[in-house]
Image (cartoon, rainbow, N blue to C red):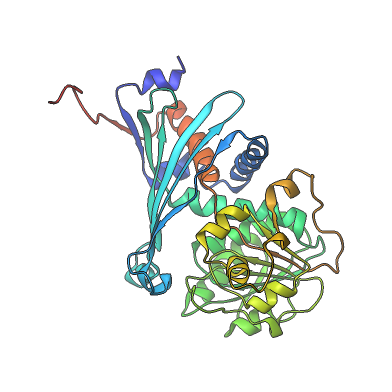
Length: 350
């Protein structure tokens, strides 16, 4: 029997946000290794990945107002073990003004043999860190190696992990311009500048942030109209990463040389991002969208020249969260971190 299964056969381990961070849940490089392994296993047919279930409380109104609730299960057949889990997470943009996390929830891990729950952990750090890890991996293959100037629209937690990933992936990156509503852009510039050693300038408009930038990253809670306009973006050689929803002009996506998703069938099913909308409205054929997995594996070329313009927008895939969470879980068990609790004393209850 797996020692983890023997240890937790009669209980469930709970890991708080602080426990998750203490066990490496915010380690972007380790998360990148987990995610890269997951994409390899996905190509080998060793990942079961049902479509993301997304519940919107008030259909017809924008998610930026109503929030949403996601359920994301996955089974990953690693070479030494199976990993079974599910992320359950809600997002409410208005929480930020209340001093609460915009997105919060849990990752649940189950014993793949008995299907009994083994661990419940806070999802905030893992969800944001694996999002940055995906961009780290994608930027190494899609962004220009000589990228020096980055334009950011958004200054939340996910943009912080984006910048950590991109600063690690882009060795010549020197300068960053960031725009967001309110004072968050100034906090971002000060705190992330100190953390990364980059020169970060808080600017007053999205246009000022992106004009002339080698690479543009958007990560905002607005999903019903684009923030970045096509006319602001250089016509050749630019890389655009759109991390949330409908953040950029459809005309910008359509004119790009290449359009990349993490996995197109999931992006299309979710239907809220610019490339999914462009295809749904008949503005662009679905055949133009590439998956990231073959690019990471070297089966499809990454960036072919400095003149190529590339758009990348991931929807987020459950196996990423589950693999990072399982590494955190194993670390927690080895270090004796977390709290164990029983969900029942005797299963014969009726």
